Length: 157
Image (cartoon, rainbow, N blue to C red; front, side):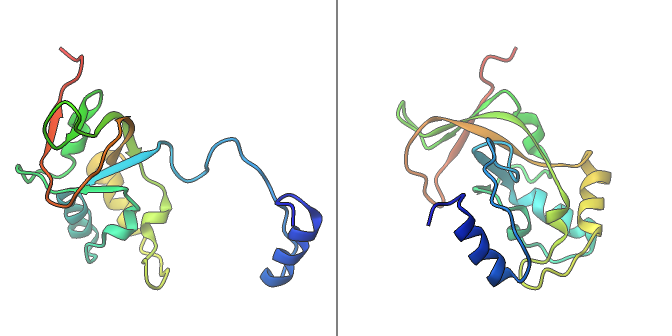
C-alpha cells in the first residue's frame, strides 16, 4: 500500500479505532539532532531530585557516558567541543551542537506510561530544562562499552 494512500490510512484507522491522517514531515518531531548523549550522573541526579528510580530509558539517549568526575549536568560544558570515542586519528567523533531541552516524555514511566511530572520539574529547577546534549557525527566508527571517551574543546578559546 502506498504510505500516503487512503487505503493505508483507512487500515491504520480501523486498527486504531478512529480516523487517522497520514502525514510526511520534513524533520522529525521528537529529537532535534542525530545523536543524543547524556551522563549517568545527570540521570541519577534528576532521579534523586524527582524522588524516582533512575531509568535511562526516560531520556531516550543514543549514548550514555560514565564520567571520571561525577558532576551532574557536566554535558553543558561540552557545547562547541568534540567527543572522541577511543584514541587515534580514526576515532569516531561527535561535535556537540546544542543542549538537549527536555519535553514531557521524560515524565512517563517506560514500563507503565504512568506520568511523574516531578521528573521534568526537577530538570527545569536544576538545569533550566536541559539534560544532556545533542551532537552531529563528524567521524564515523564503531563504539564499544567501556571505550575511553576524550573531550576536545574544538575551536573555542
